[in-house]
Length: 207
Image 1 (tube, rainbow, N blue to C red):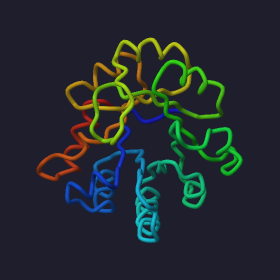
Image 2: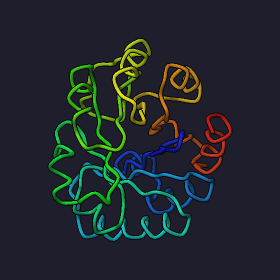
Image 3: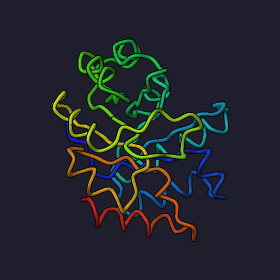
């Protein structure tokens, strides 16, 4: 499978700290031309969050963009979305017992040994990072850097998504180091709040 080169992540906590509405933000990202969107909610998943995700799923369907849900295999099935799993979540092989083969699954790795283990898992794409220092996680894993990314690239033929501290100023170096896609979180949200303009800037750069 192919993963779009620009992979925006809508982190609900970060978006709300910036004073933005998650649904409106998702709409702006999609209207600007993104073809994939990950919904990441690390807090309590309330009924309000469920409704919010439903509205975002509808927006993705209208835009013919791929929705990816972080952590939750059940929600990925309910909303016809992809699923992204971290090292502390279900293994892809266990998640497949819930999703079957119809759901696209991504799996995060943070070092060589996790990547070697991940190669035996039934994931459709693999993520690796943090490439650079990041503030989007409370307890981030150690920075891996571009040299590790180049070395890790040789361990898998599956699509590789780089994540962690990726900005417009360093994205090209990440792609040149072997990433098929760059996941972007913090650099999606400019000070002026014009997320759509920022997405269009990203798409001109990397697509």
